[in-house]
Length: 59
Image (cartoon, rainbow, N blue to C red):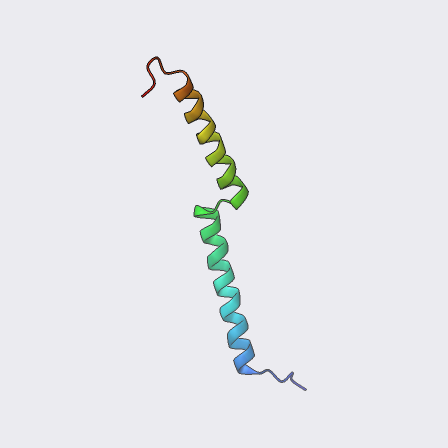
């Protein structure tokens, strides 16, 4: 005997899978973790401070 399938649940599950795949694809293209963003920001801040500290005539 065939298994009974709730069409609403099947449709929602299929939509979830599609949305998850799309999100994974976007994460591969554009995504960086919050930790990576913070590390890059702190490195840029440190480089800017170091450069500003070595100016001849501070503004």
